[in-house]
Amino acid sequence: MTLTVEEAARVLRIGRNSAYEAIARGDIPSVRIGGRVLIPSARLLALFGVEVTE
Picture 1: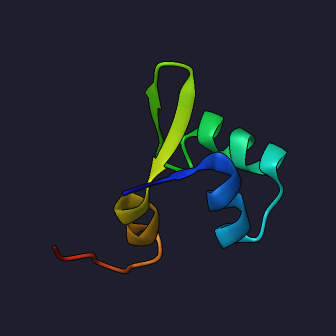
Picture 2 (picture 1 turned 120 degrees about the vertical axis):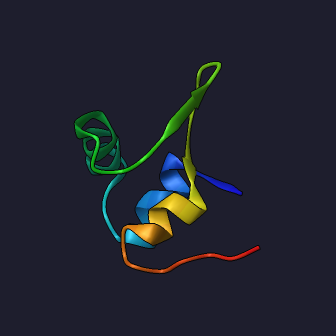
């Protein structure tokens, strides 16, 4: 599963522009598919020490 930048920003309680800046710095993991930037939810959770098992 993935999140949009806007969804990830809401989860992290930061602004959209701050989320894009964090992605550019590499602080938030992301993948670019075509023109879209998506955040893998499992990798985002891993930043907080939460492991997702499927």
